[in-house]
Image (tube, rainbow, N blue to C red):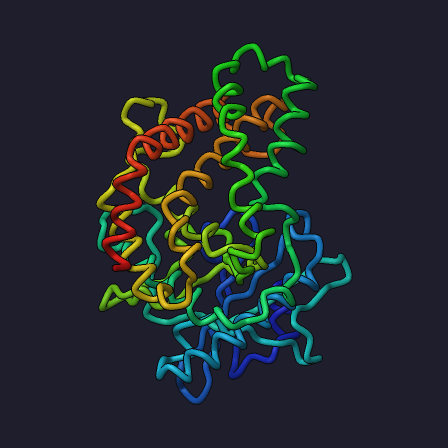
Length: 365
């Protein structure tokens, strides 16, 4: 179907002015539709969801609607602006959460957040800290949401010990791309840290870490900032919202944003954790989420940064050993370079863990 035919399925207000391809996302195909209602322009984002990546579209959209409707109520209760501080999804004229065409392609729509912008790279501690505030607020507002009612969109996504036992070890044993000999040091690095893989899972089993709503893609460009004030206003890209640990989101943010180098930089000696960025993000995150977290969560924030970095490196290494079947690569050793980079960051975090833990302690005391 043509995009204009798709637009007619949704309950948009006004007359269509134009619709164009929008954004630079790699997973979903996105359009920006502009309508005129009573002389005012209204914008809507329409996306064709990649059902190869997200085959269970019903569960995904149920999660998204449940979380955004809950957030809207919380934002209103706290005197905020629900039109700017969370995504507002639009149902079809048939009251459905998405539209499926005759080819099986699935489309969904939400209001465009006006006067907003996004950053692709972390270029200051201030901006990174503001993103921490946004993700902290996301945790705070959803702290009493029944996380167990959400569907698990990607099974065992941050179950590190499961990934170790069911993905990494079988890959090493099979050695189907004949690459194990070229990465023996990295394999030893992972095996030496098997106990780390179990830590958070065991704390869940003991009941010390609560199940929470987690975002699972806490990159900087998944936060919208106000165009004028530069304040972080809204968390976007909710496709991987599901039950998990607050620690997963915090740790992955640090992995992405506080690395002194790009994740595929092969100058491994230069790969360090930027403690100023770590502190800025932690301050922002805890200024909002601190009151909603328990002591065990707070005590493991620094460790979670190390674990999420380790897990990501292990996934890169596993993919390299398997012959690069999951992550896109630009050259034959790209995944190995990524793994070495992440492991260099893990090593630096291990050296600086007392400082990282002290930073958290200073913020929370």
